[in-house]
Image 1 (tube, rainbow, N blue to C red):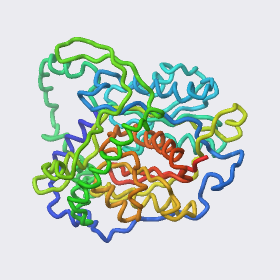
Image 2: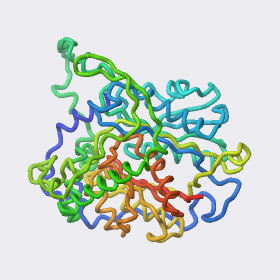
Image 3: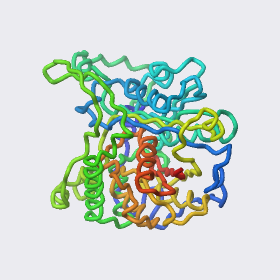
Image 4: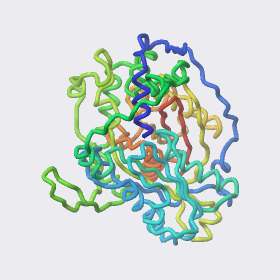
Length: 453
């Protein structure tokens, strides 16, 4: 329903004629409101203290292609429950010790909610739960909510998770095809001729710009900040290249929970499959990417090869107070040290991480080169490239095993998926610090800092 409403309102948008300056008056000279202060961290970097917020387990499903992938006939809670269970089972934690579960989810698409998924995964009624939606950072927001509750003394143990089913709910296509076209409801006396479009926020440029299609916001970033087509293609190529190598090396096996599901073939036959590998990873070349046509406007530079894939998937991160983890004999993978949120102009929402990352660095007293791995969500190569250039991220430290262009971007899942990918990479490389970051639709950026142990 929410996505339908956005579609209705988007019909009232007038295409932005000059991307270098928005209707709201934003241009390349826009500056963020920065509030970070040194020392705004959870615990002290480099010191292990009883009240630290630590990560005990972080796992995910494979990410599958929307509409025709391995999870196309799977309900969202059936993707989520296996990872909720696995983060506990993998470390032999009795699920009764979990105090709260927060699940990030954006599109809905038939998702029954955190509570049914919780019980499906085998958690008792004594475990609290909720669902959160902060667009593409929903998974990280769920993790931060759990971390904040631990830091504040509200809970000792919780799971921050995310799930997104961007494929239609199982059976939806067949139901839609079979359903008779509904008759138009009689018009109420005195009703406006166009009630759906009679919304006051459409009169406010900045509010209206929150409805700009994401692909157009990517084009706005390229034009406003001078991001070249070749640079976008190269970032997309590197994402796929690194993911191909990582998959061949078996790097993803330890973070992926195999899920056995049934799928319905085109002829109606049903078969059981086990989904255990990412479906979007593919070998490509700069030459092949250069041949792709613009995806969002005829004279644009953003293509299918420089955009994140539309995917289905779930991920979960188990966090504890350090003293509680030690009491229960849990392994400690990393500690969560800091996080930051920023607001940016909606029409270039992709620039968010270019400002949230420096905020996290300032809080932690770190320089750009002090961070070993940057997991920056590749919603589009345009915004990821802008972030690299603006922050000065060393390219060899950016998404070392590929990003969303190769792996996929299930909105509510991504923030948790990034952590499940970051921590093993820090272990493999011997790195000390890692950052996850992403932009969010409507104009935001978020980032978080983790310390490897």
